[in-house]
Amino acid sequence: MNTFQQTTRPILILGGTGKTGRRIADQLSGQGLAVRIASRIGSPAFDWENRATWGRALEGAAAVYVSYYPDLAAPGAAATVGAFADLAVAMGVKRLVLLSGRGEPEAQRAEDMVKRAGADWTVLRCSWFMQNFSESFMLDAVLAGEVALPVGAVREPFIDADDIADAAVAAFTDDRHIGQLYELTGPRLLSFGDAVAEIAAASGRSVRFTEITATDFATGLAAGGLPPDLVALLMMLFTEVLDGRNEHVCDGVQRALGRPARDFRDYARAAAASGVWGGAK
Image (cartoon, rainbow, N blue to C red):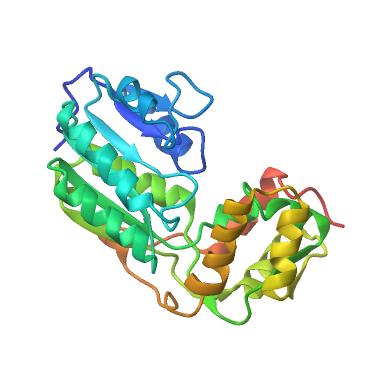
């Protein structure tokens, strides 16, 4: 059953140009649903740090995909998301779908804020995105032939952003997902070295993984011009969240979609075929 099938009110997609947001927007639009994409450089402009932008983005919206920037693990994220969720409900939003993260205390506080806001809710608690290697900060490293990170043998069940988008679309178009928390992971555990090896095999490129110290990682990020707050956030994610606490696979994709999660090998082959990593090198 689809609560929104007969309404012309839009579904607001925060971060609608990002890895998950644009996929969700494309799917919902393809189903004939009204979509409003909000981003810092879009129209309407939306900035988590500028609350004056929130109301205009929310005006008339029936539902919201809540994707927090830069990450729900960031200090203060829960309070900000909670304030947004309260405003959304006060302005008539009926459903909130939250993109959350595994093993992140601040993210789980944000989940509680959304649950308490008063709208129908669905939480998508996700592992690391496979697409971080092809659409994000690790793409340049893959192209350069070396992915150097301060993480060792700890394994992560990387999730495909397409699976996240499919689950979010389901949450907006089928009422059975109301009140559900789906922990979304891929079907198997891989170390970052394993993941890089799969990318090398799929792409034909010479790409290696190197474990470096946290100090060297932070120095490299700062030298690349990354702002100090983002450096601190990435340091926390790599040195605290990737400590083994998430080293297990969950059945969230199967529960939400009735099918298995996509495997990293399939992602790597599809990304290689798209040309994002270029040819063999």
